[in-house]
Length: 222
Image (cartoon, rainbow, N blue to C red; front, side, top):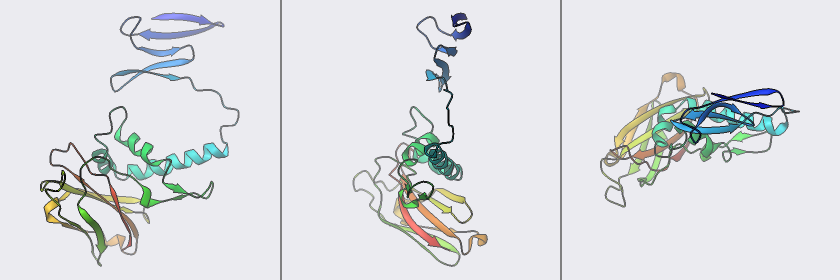
């Protein structure tokens, strides 16, 4: 532990591994901390004359919308961005992929463009012709099996997300069906009848080491 005096203010930081190591606590204009086992620094928060400008309101709104949506389908996101979460969490990857590009309009009249949302990334090939339709009781996902084409394998699994934007809730089905099955049927809750849902789909390989990009399958009223 050491102390530095700066204009009569005592600034304290604890060095954990010697003078060249990381440190915890404030030191001058920065604060040291550990995250995911790594030594990190951030600048101290500055006082803001006007903490509620229109630009700040806009970004807070974007952050709130993406955070709430992501919280409804964490498993879908965590699997979808597992390979990309090297220096941040899967939820942070989801935020970074979406916060800038999925809104249309100008503040304060912003609209979330559901077709632009990204839930997964990777180099695994998607199946051909993914689509979804609905009956009175179920949503049926279909695709054309392309096993053996590119890196597509018969053991790859389909993952589906049904986001109910009327009720701001979601249902996810991980490893719903093998690529070779070419179809999966989901019986939705009876309380969802008449609601609008947004549908998403991606594939994962059997070892869970690679995903396809997610694909938007459209909006359906149940």
